[in-house]
Length: 160
Image (cartoon, rainbow, N blue to C red; front, side):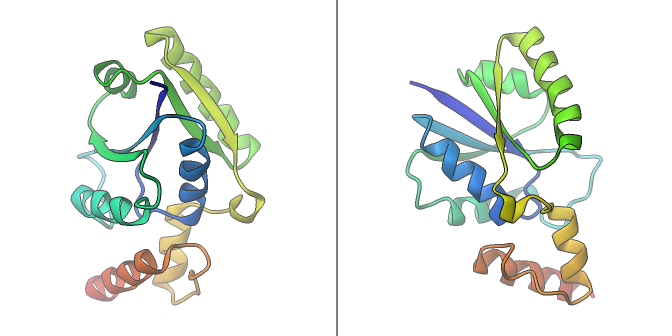
């Protein structure tokens, strides 16, 4: 079975993330979308909320599984018999950072990294930017699935 992982914080999941996940699901028998657990970082949504939102929006792809991890991604890959990491690249600046990480991961474990160029519609898109725009009342409806946009607006209102 060809298995890959799409790691990230997904705080919240965007249409750019979903583009990469959908495309990866067509290339691998199973794609695990793994949410990073970073206890030193406070996200807008809890890890459990992110997992729930990801399960909702990835439901159309039966070979996509949602999970979380804490620690080295390559350890997660080894423990789950995953041979590839799939990362979306938005710009050259992403490549500089991601190439170093890919080379380190390959050296540590033999796990390969596959880079997918982001759909140009989403080349500027980052969860942090979406949260900032939404916080100030900007329209992010074309950047997020409708259910995720609603939850984002509700969370921003709660945090007032």
